[in-house]
Length: 319
Ligand code: 5GP
Ligand code: MN
Image (tube, rainbow, N blue to C red; front, side, top):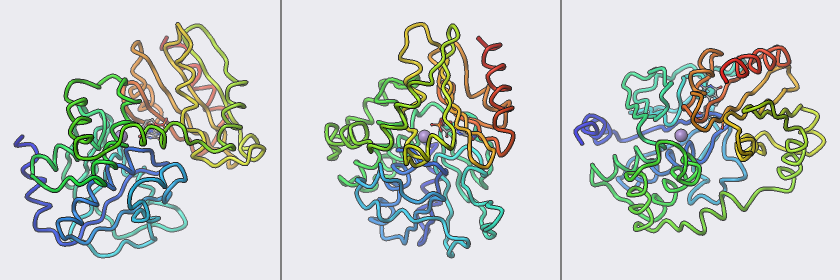
């Protein structure tokens, strides 16, 4: 496990560390940051965990979730700045046109996205890991650092959600070994599945109903679209879309699922999922997005309706 040596050597002397993860955070963005953050705190370091979007309702149950702060316009001083689970620097959300965070250079870019652009001064990119939380667990194990229940819980949530409950491609014997180590360290699989999958808000459910009625099927392609009006009508939050795109793949014969969100400002967010036939990360990269072979996304700042058509045409051609 020599791969971790350089990272361990960089982290060991650091007294203060800032951890960043991607906007529109998911279980792995929060879980990997909180897991590493709690471990570094246990080692006596001063740790700040920042996310552009702060803490979403869904993940309030995470132990010490209050440590997750909204990224300030200017980051405090720290010996090390580490980005987690974030494939492009832009997705750190630091370059906001109104409030640019000026003093940032990422020292370590730790991620598992195959499309990671390598924006850090040092990179630790392992696409064979189905979750960034798995990289952090292997780091902690290799370094022989503490793995208390709270740390194991945060990392288990990252592993559980990014593997799609242990079924996405890339889930292998090592993944189950990681899960076993986390459960042995105190992570509770039943309680955490309840929190992650049986805990959506009524507004999210309403939004999902809209998305269900809008599904369209064209051979192996399934797609659905929501507008800003749908969010307003349902009183839904941006994070309430979790799980929508996956439902397209539940239909037999569907290979590719797309979910389009047309924004009030004219922008468009695209979520893509595929079974095996199509590499959606490659597709997303051609539009400036990224992700994994089976799960990827794209963000367009403008011309939402036209870009939706462009993406749809590309998906039809790919199949
Ligand atoms: P989701 O569809 O759940 O938002 O994202 C699926 C995957 O694609 C995640 O791994 C996420 O990090 C990545 N992803 C989503 N949107 C974007 C994007 O706009 N740019 C890039 N580079 N990756 C994205
Ligand atoms: Mn991830």
